[in-house]
Image 1 (cartoon, rainbow, N blue to C red):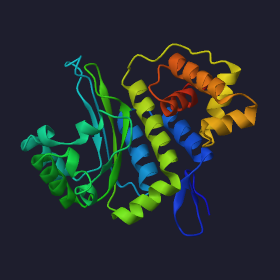
Image 2 (image 1 turned 180 degrees about the vertical axis):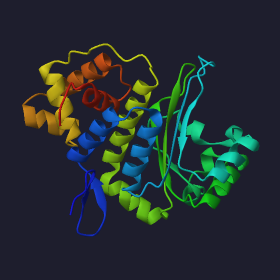
Image 3 (image 1 turned 90 degrees about the vertical axis):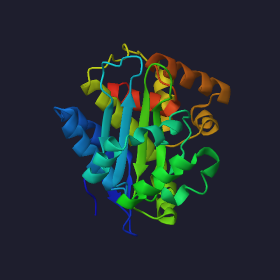
Length: 260
């Protein structure tokens, strides 16, 4: 049994595939406003078990631009967050200092004790009253003086089930987050990168990357040295103004440079 976005596996779990990500991208392109895109993104993520996602994007260098914030957290929590000025103790902003995924949620408080202040740990416990137990960060732009932000793919799932979710389709979840981010920014009339004109080899390397292959595996597939594959991927990142290979892949898909 299959719906538009997810292949339903025999065990009942759903997993994103290339077709579902293409369908997501196409539907995002047809949305007329940010609210519609957020509604679409929530439905896609909920189908994976990510029922409490949060997206934030801030521009410290342009204070006249309001932060872009979308959250599936309950209204009472959003009101409490604003009234108690909890942004000062929200550890989300710490996760934006690294592109590496950081586990989040009350089920990871003890594991993250080394990086959390007492106030931040208490913030996470309070957030847990919404049902939020597990999550992982997905930084779309690392923290700097210009602009930064990312996702917290939050869930009510307990840690063992959430980690099983990530093992099954964490890469697809990450790519979906980048696709939605790119679409959000386009709707917000942010400056888009100029046409990239990727070379055939750069496109080919990105296509194999989309299949989940690592550098050495891509090199074997196309008969090049690993260092040459790295150079092609680096060239694609530069042309697409992407911080990571995954962001370059998302931008290449969104711009039509490659088709899965």
